[in-house]
Amino acid sequence: MLPIASGSICGVGSITSERGITTSRAQPANGSRRHAPPMPTRLATGTSREAIGRDAFVEQVWEWRDLYGGTIIDQFKRLGATLDYDDERFPMDERYAQAGPKVFGELYGRGRHYRATIPADRDPARRTAVNGMPSQPLTVMLDQVRATLQAEPVTRATLPPDLVRDWVAPDGHARLQVFPTGDGNDNQVIKRFRAAVATVTPAISGLPVATQAAASTVAGAFVQAGVIAFLLVSLLLFLVLRNVREVAFTLAPVVLSIFLTLATCVVIGQPINFANIIAFPLLFGVGVAFHIYFVMAWRGGATDLLQSSLARAVLFSALATGTAFGSLWLSHHPGTASMGKILMISLAWTLICALVFEPALLGPPLKAKEESEPAAA
Image 1 (spheres, helix red, strand yellow):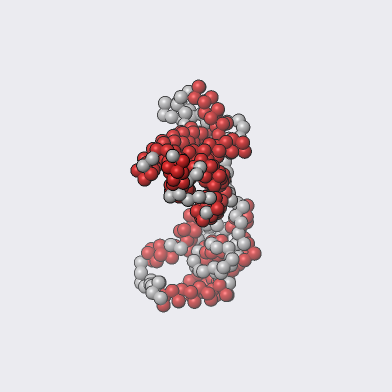
Image 2: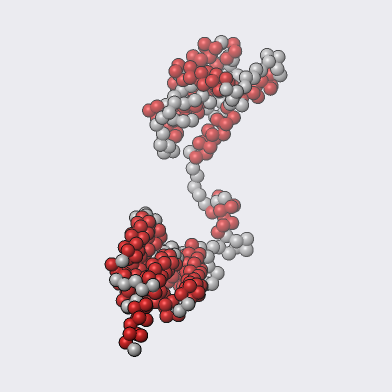
């Protein structure tokens, strides 16, 4: 197949042209053909291309192409193929014919092609087989096009066996497929639909069942992971702070920010699902990191925490984290967008609890209390 310029009908020009070129190879001497219109005039009367010479043969191919070359293009159009029909190329066009030898010559020079010859004394049957090789893929492709144009009524008896086995068991039981009414993207609709079908038969499968099972598994796994993380973080804080009250001071604002985030989701109608529940473990980690700074500064006797460089550092850190989380909110994917939304809501409540609730919960610095007690005594 000769190269086709950019923007041309890739393959179509070669299909129609090779159909003309291989006509003399696939056509018997009497000119009759099984799959294509016969070649006109001299070849149609039984004269071979060798007998009439190359120039006359090229003339015959052009004549055949002018008469029947548009048939396959019309078939492609009826099939709805969206091709650039205005830029069709025929390999016997002058520019096209010149491009072929040039490209093949360059590829041969790079060692990408090799040159083979067919000796004149080779067995005629083998020469015929070699000459017919270019037309074999074309014949298969044309048979496929022909099959698509010969539509027949579809009945149960004519269905492919593989398709029948997907719906009918060997014992005669048929698979029944039902769909829910309402919005199929609504989690509550899917839950009611699955429960209603399960009351009829427990042997159910499909996307609603798999989705609900996956959601339940993922949500349960996150709850379990959250409980384990809470216990491990509490133990780590106790090993660092050595004080149960200070551990509570660190974790209480985190728990409060989680409840405030859940309440906000209820108010705005944002459901919690297995796609966005990952926001809460992230919230827990960010919250602990923010609040422990204030607890450690409070233990060291720092005053005016809101006016300190620590508060500004926490604020800037939250803004940087919020920029990354906020980009998820802009996603076109519903699950990713909901995760970004919940992350932003939780980060906002975490920052408020860190800058407002935490200093109020801690009260005066610990060292200031220790110094004031002996003085009062």
